[in-house]
Length: 194
Image (cartoon, rainbow, N blue to C red; front, side, top):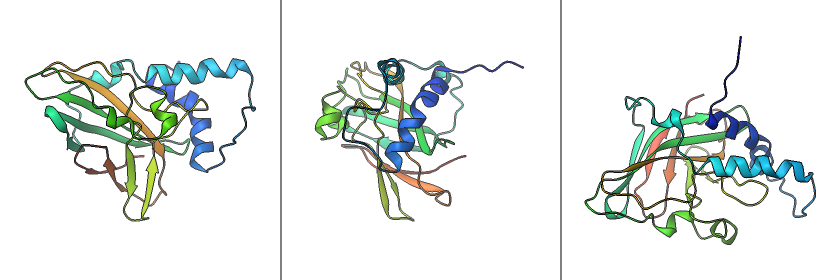
């Protein structure tokens, strides 16, 4: 029996230790804690986030969990929201330009935290709200402060779409439904699987 890891799975495997630390609020302020050999994997996970993932493009028959409408004809279609064993939730979908002109992705989607903005354009401003537990979860970051989301967006031509993902700390196991908030977009409520 052989095991194949997709780009998405490798990214999750390399990011889960960081996700656990951030989810429990045990982030250390000092720079120690690992050798230089650890850094390329963290970089790889973040850089893979900006690449097109074949598994996200397969099967347009993926069901839509929610659609968030944004400015200039942009909309975000959420297709999966999976709870992972590592203690985080990965929300995936497609960001599409449904307008008639080429659109640059708004800088506001990165949020307003200096550390996230310093790492380029991203979906770092997204939050996941647990209405039952009355808690808000922010996008996870790796040890270098890079958000665990799709990054470095190109301009989207009319009709063009881009697969995207965001990772958040997981709400409690009894939370089945969450709301995604993204700056400049409407909100969307959907269920978490797994």
